[in-house]
Length: 76
Image (cartoon, rainbow, N blue to C red; front, side):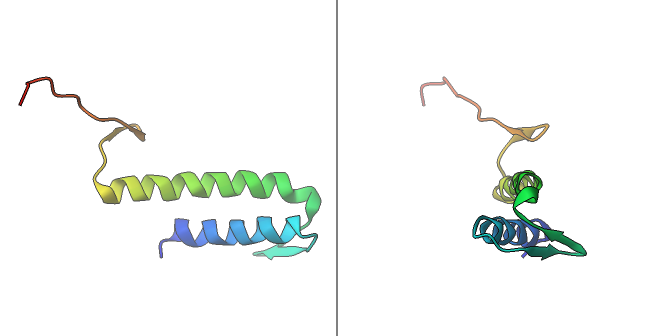
C-alpha cells in the first residue's frame, strides 16, 4: 500500500464516520460534521494522487498528468 492509498482509505473512513454522526480523529485533529467539507476536499486530493499512481504504474501516456492516446490511421 502506498502513502496515497493509505491516506485515501483514512479519508474515506473519516467521511463515512462523520456522515454517521461520529467524531473522528485524524492525527491530532478531531473532525465533526462541520468539518465534512474539508474531509471531502482531502479525500478528493488523495483520490487524484492514487489515480496518478495507478496511471503511472499502468504505463499510461500523459502530459502534465493528463492522459492521452495516439490514433494511428495507417490502415494496418
